[in-house]
Length: 327
Image (cartoon, rainbow, N blue to C red; front, top):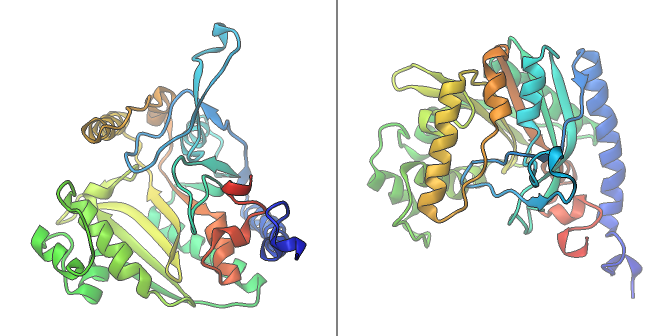
């Protein structure tokens, strides 16, 4: 039996990818050092979780003295909240490269623990940060001798050009029509759910593998932690970057309004209740810090997704030492 086929050791593809990963980390750190962006490290365990209904956090119990704080702690799904607290404290441009955790996400393209690169640029908007994110991804591709064309579109133009649908004005029935051949239980789906299904089933899969696709200015209802620009209709100042058919990065012109952020957390938890999910403690430290946070843009990029793109692979097991079922 080939030892590399045994679950007790890493696959041959993963061993090659580990070397690529090490070079990529060095490249990322050099990229940000040249731009005077500071590398920082923030807690992995938090008193608050991620309220986003489509993301589930792991939790654990601290068994030490109660003076240390709340016993229940949440494994971070991203380093976003503590990084924003550092921005509010005046740290300036910063990034973190580290492990994050998402419960229930395991499969061909997902692993419950993975590596995220997240960075923030003070005084930038999402469009400027989108360009820098593209520059970083192009540099990573060059490391493995690859190039990619770049296509940039607004969310609205993306739908109009590819599906002849205006995502801001189309009726639910019009959004459902291109998905008629897909087996979907749509009873509890919202308008944004149908838009997301069109992205994952009709738009995203058609992206060429040698293309970086940049999509910006999303519907205001998909704002997450982004500012909303009062256009007609209003849009969320947000972007996504795709390498081939895979989403790599999600970035925002960051919201700094604590009252609005609290309302968004509360809406998330209300949606969790309606779905029968557990409510998640909100990050009050973040809400206290937001009024002091400078105007900035931030982006999170999945390292494994980037490594999959560099390797030309569709399987996350090819770019990690040991997948979840072998950890």
